[in-house]
Length: 279
Image (cartoon, rainbow, N blue to C red; front, side, top):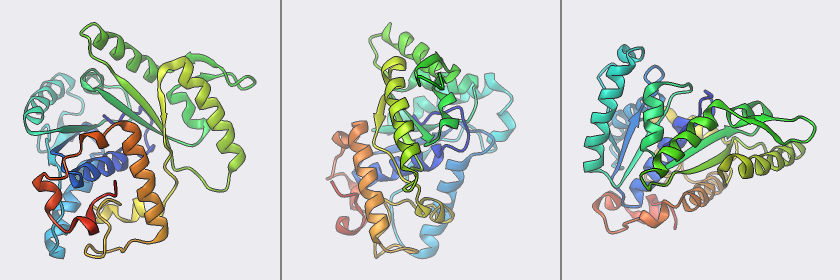
């Protein structure tokens, strides 16, 4: 599950990137977009479904389970949304090796239910102290935790409830949109994040740098996992190759690479040397 109560952290982009990367690794992937108003992940996948046949190319797409045709209609009807989410999860579990849930930038009953379902929560955060409030309040002098955030408490409560049923919950925070130039800020954020990881209880995943490629590929429904000479609009360049290596490192840290089934049909929709994420 991709979770963060702060909007604009890159949840939908990361959800799509993980989903499509794992498709190329032979996984059966399903997605559920619980951001019932924005639906950014659903729009990216809709762009993908339109662009691929128009361009005359083949590439794998995840199964998408929509709660209703117009999710915005039930955004304020949480009991209905919760029931439909539970039904979607039941169907997705029968069809998938991996289910990716994109959550809204806010606290809802459906989002809390998704946290209870998740084995792994990935929280992208912009590489800024502004985003630290998502995890906890820190002392500006010592950089030590004053109190966990509401969102951190949601995850800790979900972890405690799952533990009663002998189910683990892994939480990984990923520094997103890492700036290359501001090394002083990067070091300060990293130091404070390491301190919070020990006190709040999460792992720190490999960071993802700020890259134009993530934004420019959205209108086509593509991700870096798709880039190859056979897929327009982009060929692989040095920056994109470096970005793909970052994604590989993240997948490994999340423990998703061990799920790969390279002989599965989904991995053979095209020449693997051109499409597949490098091991």
